[in-house]
Image (cartoon, rainbow, N blue to C red):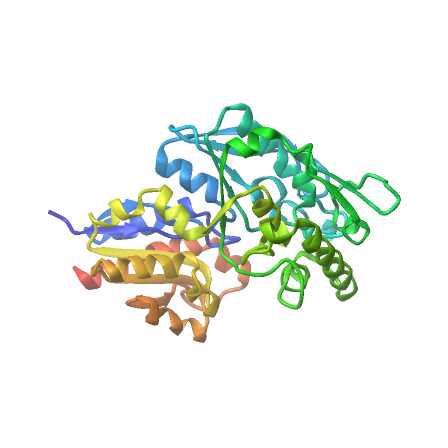
Length: 367
């Protein structure tokens, strides 16, 4: 009987989604004479809906919504056999959907997530999992809440739309209009940061610049988020409130229970059951660095493999020197997949071949 490798990568952003990465790794394992289990994962951001639906045997339904800057788009809602629905923020308002030249955190709103949540409620979902990460917004989740029935007003009583630019003007919130079905539905939010809503480590300073915010805009947004922090109150004041530009706080206000994103996806996809069948675990992500050891997918996989007494090899499109921290959480080896010096575009195009070759080499060494 051939030995079995569990191929459980996250995406390699800009090169391969998690499903494509798992396929490439599995092909390399099989070329070395191993059996392989393809088990794509995610951390709550891009690919979360796809990974859970594939793992649970559900379906994806396309819902009409709008992206972060208001353009019409179709976003996938995951519907699982038990009725649970998976809402991935990045599907609707993901930064990857907005051309770099059009990114504008002051105009951007999380309102596009609301149609997905409402569609889940219409289907009678007993449980809604909301995956955060990869959003183009820093609006404190106000757009989402307004889309679900909350009303926000400025000091003159004017109704606000819930964009980033509206935050400094928020003076009063009316929660009475929130869809009553939310109170009867279990809400779970998948996140992988513990940032507060406002302050030096909050949503605007931490996430604003990567979404195109200037230093002046970061200051304006942070001041607005500080006002929201007061208006949302203690219920929303939890570690992770600043996740996805403050979407975490909005979800907490709705009563959502937080779970680390990678951990949630592993639970939902039956990772433990697949781990029990394996003799070797392979995982991967695009950039492996110090942040990878702080609860990202590859670190969670390495920890699980170590606890099960199995070797775990982590592959990266890029591996930084400080990625050595992953050895402390259970990794057996941390390896870059690049072969030779290449321009970045060529390196991205060859990621599948490089990952396949790396998996084959590791399995050949262990044969």
